[in-house]
Image (cartoon, rainbow, N blue to C red; front, side, top):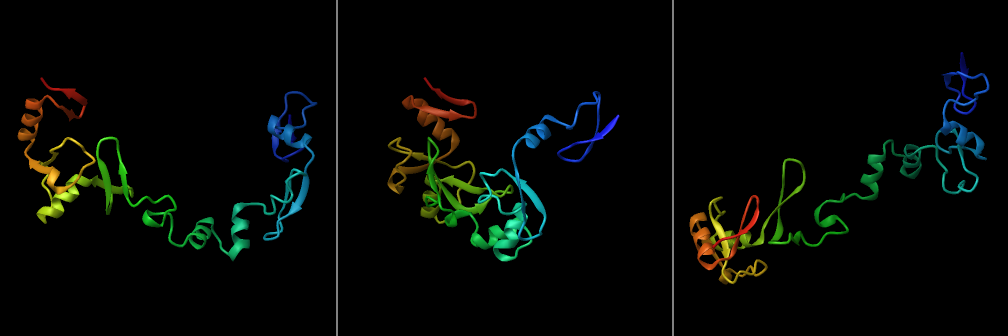
Length: 186
């Protein structure tokens, strides 16, 4: 047997004749005292709880946006309220495009990755490439002489090949990183 839900007016199949609502959600909504308001933009009627009539004035976010500046889509509302967007130095949490990742200081080089995220490079590599006035090759490793990865003065940096870098660390017994984590050479 099919009945109409007393709250949402959708048809549903009834096993017992006493059932008035299609779901527990509709039962809960129907038993709460609600007030009916009319949307000032589209005149559509919607219900809200009596303690929140001052909060809910519009039937949807779309109508809220239309009311603010006569916009059609919520994305347009964001463009007006935040014309510069939330990217880069325009973001309120911008810290200069520089952060410490736990091992090296990373800086934003002004480019973006294919997925739209900002591209960060090691500050030590940037400092060395500016000093040499050329981009560094992939196989050139910038080594910190005093082993302090936060000290990126040009006097503290040297370029080594991977084999020279590995040999230097193995002679001194320092930790060197690999893609599986760090290990101590003997």
